[in-house]
Amino acid sequence: MRVFVAGATGAIGRQLVPRLVGAGHEVHGMTRRESKQAMLRELGAVPVVADALDPDQVAEAVGRARPDVIVHQLTAIAALDMRHFDRDFAVTNRLRIEGTDHLLSAGQAVGVRRFVAQGVAGYGAYARTGAPIKTEEDPLDPAPAREMRQTLAAIRHLEQAVLGARWTEGIVLRYGAFYGPGTSMAPGGQQPELIRQRKFPLVGDGGGVWSFIHVADAAEATVAAVEHGSRGVYNVVDDHPAPVAEWLPALAQELGARKPMRVPRLIGRLFAGEAGVVMMTELRGASNAKAKRELGWHPAHPSWRHGLAAA
Image 1 (cartoon, rainbow, N blue to C red):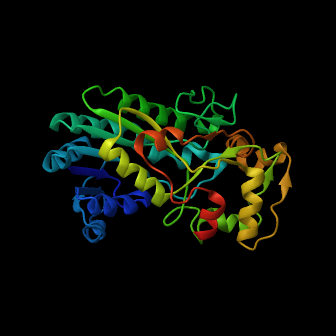
Image 2 (image 1 turned 135 degrees about the horizontal axis):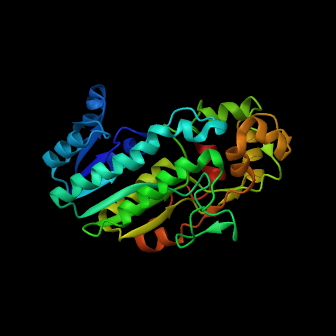
């Protein structure tokens, strides 16, 4: 198949493109930077330079490629300050709203058969009530933290637009918290450094449940969705969701750092905002049973405990 990957040079894109090429697909990789064309050629893709926020450029790029499948992996996340969550996700939120709409419009014009988009299983996407582990049937959070409202609204827009496109097979992959090459959890990344410096404390009871996924496993699941996914949502996470009180001290130990400080919720709110407290104390994890069953996918890194150590 001919596959158009938007966001082909991001953390997922760099893992996904060579896997699609290796599976025999013709890949057209979109980037907004001329300087990244050489990288895309090395990965085995046909480079496409376009600004995802410019509908004319997107329409022209997709029109030239005439793909069977579009994969939407567009993000623009740098350093993240939990106190200003929506501010730091502002461009990504535009990509999830405007970028999604531009890609869908361009895809409809050329008759794309399948549209696979990056969704979110982590950072407060699921409602913070009920069971600690959520399936795809559970609702998204109807009342997110104030600093996360715009980000969750963008996620909702993406999902509704993709799943509502009846002219194509719309698929949303709700990825867990990424780790591995090119992520903020990579060696030298933002989060490990904060943990080393004891600037990533355990807030409250640390009961927020996180679901992790290695970027290579996320890419493998995406290939499976491209090839035989069905309309709907899939959680792409590892087998072992874990509360912060479990994974944070374990990661600190693996990094050779001192045990994280524990602070009450009130103090946590001062330096991490409401969003940070939610992620530390109220987050819900996700089940990958559907992705395993329907995509035939199984993570090579089934547990964050061993995967983070290897990474």
